[in-house]
Length: 88
Image (cartoon, rainbow, N blue to C red; front, top):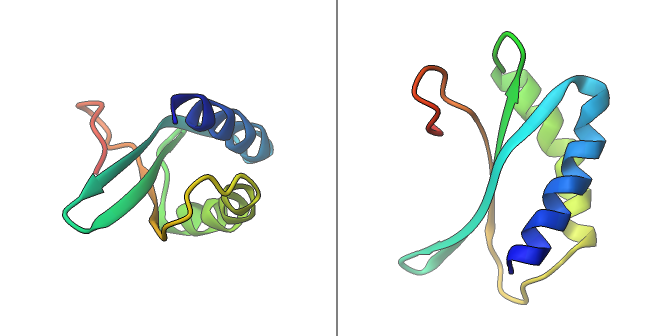
């Protein structure tokens, strides 16, 4: 799983680089009956909701290309919370 996540992080980072968006973290976790693929983004000066939406449109086909789980999961694209280094 870690190898997949690193490859995915590299591909997503490369696709978002022209928009000056950085991938700060990526992880896959299960909570109760749900599975989440969370991709945390940041941008110099902060990142707004419109940028998250645009980035998600770029990320979705990349995640689909590297389909690594047979079960369904929720793609959660989030911004890095400013100040403490933890995600929102």
